[in-house]
Amino acid sequence: MKSAAFGPLRKGIPTARVLIVALALVGAAPRASSGVTEEEYAGRRSAVAEALDTAAVAIFRGADVKMRSADVDYRYRQESNLLYLAGINEPGITLILTGKGIPLDGASYRRFLLAGADARKAISSAGLFKDGLVLDPARLSEVLGLVLQGTQTLYLSMPDIRFVNDWMNNRPLFLDRDVRKELERRIAGLKVRSAGPLVTKLREIKSQAEIDLIAKSIAVTGDGLVRAMRTSGPGVFEYELQAAVEFEMSRQGAEAVGFPSIIGSGPNSLILHYSMNRRKMKEGEMVVMDVGAEVEGYSADVTRSIPIDGSFSREQRQVYTAVLDAQKAAIAAIRPGATFAQLEKIARESLALSGFAKYLTHGISHHLGLDTHDAGSLDTLRAGMVITVEPGAYIPANDTTLGPGFRGWGVRIEDDVLVTGSGNTVLSAKIPKEIGEIERIMRK
Image (cartoon, rainbow, N blue to C red; front, side, top):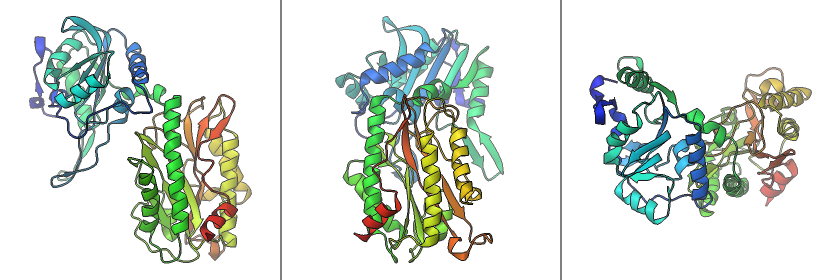
C-alpha cells in the first residue's frame, strides 16, 4: 500500500487510513443474538482484554459490504470474530480492546465500539455494550491516537485487507502484509500481529447458548435433507434437491446457508466442493448432499448420500456400509483427550478392512460454529467443542481395481458431534443415515 494512504493522528501518531474509513451503516438495526446474551458477549470481550498486557491493543474491524454486480450487493454477513465479540451483524463496526484504561470523555475505558448513528441508538436502547464506550466513527482517529500511545503490540483483524491478485501484472498483492509493515515503519517499536489467535481458544469451546443455536441449525438442515430425499428421483435436477433443502431451512427460520449447498450426483459426487447443482440425475446413480443452515450466525454441516431412485444397489450398499462403519468407529472414539489425528486413523483403518481406504481423499473432521470450518486447533479434543465427522469414499471412473458397478461415484456421510465431559453427543443423530431408513423415506 502506498504511503499516501497514511495520515497523521492526534499527537502525531500515524496509522493506516484503512483504520479510519467512514463507518456508514446500512440495513436493519443491530442487536445481540436472541440465543447469546449481552452478558455472554461482555464476558468474551473481557476475556480478550484480560489477555492483553498494558502495552497491547486489539482492533477488530467489521466486514465490508461485498458487491455482487452493478449496484447490487451480496447479503451481508459480519466477520466472525467481531460477531463473536459483539453480536452485531452490521457493516461499518470497529471494536477496540485495550490492555489498560484509556481516558476519554471524563472516564477511563478499555473497550470502544465505533458505529454509525442508527446503530448507536439501537445499541443504547437495547442495553448493549455497557462495558465500554460507544462512539461515532468520526472519532476513530482520535481514539486511535490515544490507544496507540505507548503501544508495543497491535493485534489487528481487518477481514477485507488480504491477498489480492494483480492479474494485469501477474503478481500477488499482500495488502495485509503491507499494512503491517507500514504501521511498524511509522510507529517506532510497534509490532503488528493477527488478532485471530486471541479469539480462537475462546471460540473452539462452545457455550450452552452456542450449542443450542448449532442444534437448531442442524435440526432444520435435517428436515431439509428429508424433504430432498422425498424429492429425489430419476430425471430430477440437482437444483431441485437444493431447492427442497433450502426451502425447508428457510421455512423454519434459517437466515441463510452456512456455505453453498453441495448436491453432486453421479460423476459430480466425486467433486468435494461441487456447487453448480445443474445436472439431471439418472436412475441407478448416487447423489451426495452436503448442506448446512445458518441460524443467528451459527452453521450446521451435514452430509447424506442417497441412491437417486431410492434403492441401494449391491455395490452402493457395500461402499456406503463401509463409510458408515468408519464414521461410527470414529465417533465412538470422541472424548476429551482424543486427537483429530486419532479419529482419522480409526476411520482409515476401518475403511481398510473393506478395501476402500485409498478412496478417502480428505481429512474427516473440523470445528463447527460461526464458520463452517470454525476457528480452533486440529489437535486435542476438549469438552465443549463441536466437530464434524465426515469420512467418504470416491472411486474414479477409470479405476481398474474394482468392478464397473463401483466406478465413477462417491459417498460421504457427515454428522456434527459435541464433545462432552465423558464422551460425545451426536447433535445430528435424528437425521436418517441407515440404509433402511433412507430407503423407507424415499419409498414414501
